[in-house]
Amino acid sequence: MAAEGSRKCQTCHGQGVVPAEMGPMDCPDCGGSGVLPGRDVLVEWRIAEIERVHSGSSDEVAPHVRWLAFELRRARRALVQVMTLSEELDGENALVKRVRFVANDALGLYEPLAEPDSTKSK
Image (cartoon, rainbow, N blue to C red; front, side):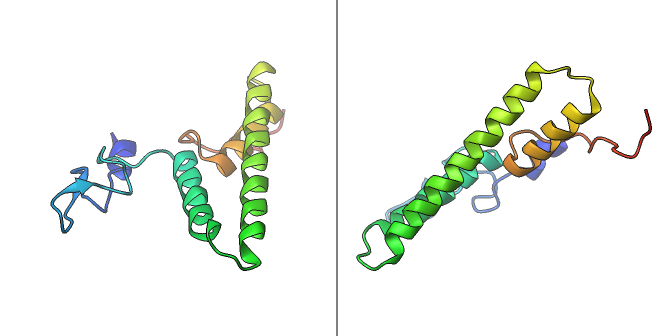
């Protein structure tokens, strides 16, 4: 599958482990699976890492990072709800397909087959 090959972890070359001083350890990028998770998981991992790095700082940046992470997660949850609601609507409607495509483009939950053609006339 082309999608699986493109998701192969480049850090561990698909092996799931990387060398460390104390011996092999699970790859931090793929969690030991050898395949990168979906973009939604990667975004959450990145948000959590940024929060972790700034959580111990006593400067004025930490509360701003927490606020930004909260807002990003809230916006992503809203887009998931938009996608869910669009599934409940008429699936053949061109506008519904377009809304679903745009929300998925931002979230990266599914591999899109092709962008709906918005230039077709009805």
